[in-house]
Image (cartoon, rainbow, N blue to C red; front, side, top):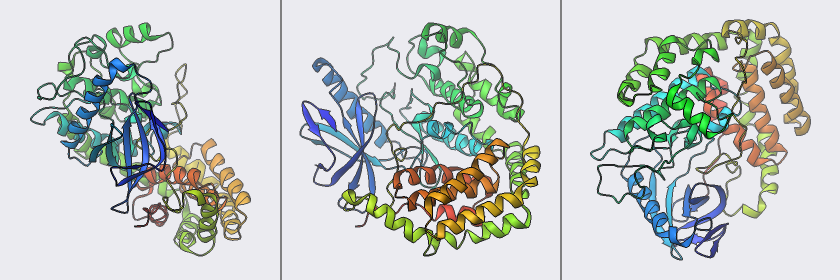
Length: 483
């Protein structure tokens, strides 16, 4: 529920005669986000309502002004890398914003499974940089001011979008400003030196935060850690250089490491612009060569057994066995929301809100150099026949309706792949997809949807969109609500 001006707005409430709230997805600094359905069009939406319960009455005019300002700023930004605002309104004197619903998860949740594969990171980074360039070059430039992994959400196709412009600044616009000069807004571990000093917002803030996000996605930890409190963190941000990102991720291409550290420059004038970042991330040679080499390593380790098994995935997800039983299980588990929800609703991470997530890895000291991709491929290849035999047995259990046993078998294969460093091996991805379908069969629809979203976000970059397993995963997504 959201408490607004003394009233409780709960799931099932119809806003503006059109948007019905389904369930809360998360809470931000001054808003509660709900999953909703559009009664006029058969689609999911995310509805953000002003939440006044945690603020003093004297603060409400400022909160309302900032909420309205967020809607206006976002409505003026039309870019595929920025979440779209669809509508705005008021319910019982409580303002709300209607946005496109993103399947998720956010990149903070993805980091819970470890640092991103470099191929995935390059794809996301180029899109984020292009969205920042677009925002920064508007007639009235928009500065996000709170760029961080949890504000970067994946859509159903695994493409990243920037969300939550609640504290964004537009220094040259005629929109009323609701932040006094000297006020520090943002998330400290991603804040630029000039933000920490309380200087007026400028595009350099976003560029530093972008560098900190890339560092976090590569290393599994931010450039500086608040291990000794905020004062020590601020001292480090203001005066120290972060450890080289290659310290934690030795396989990072030199050009990418150089870009990350250039974005983290203490002097905002020395940081590359968003346009320069886009150019470096998309000029092909280094980035495309790296991704191509990694893809060859990943898909080369598997041989005939792998190819035969993965080809079989084309039929299993669409047949009457596992998928049909899973749908029945999900339907019985979610009967209370059947009139609003699809057969497989988005999980806790499938939101524009904040979902529980595992913390990013934070090694206290530099870890030993990870096994190179080539070595991982060779090690995994040594046990491929055994992997695929176990996966085939798990598939048989799945078709026979032995969902708990199938889930245990898939989990065992995934664990062994992980232990050998074969995080992107086709067997690991096939086991992950098996767990999605097993959880569906067990009636755990939300957990299955969250797993499917995470897998969908990375499988195309790893195996390619034409791979049979990729096609099976991407066509297994949740359906929109019936209209």
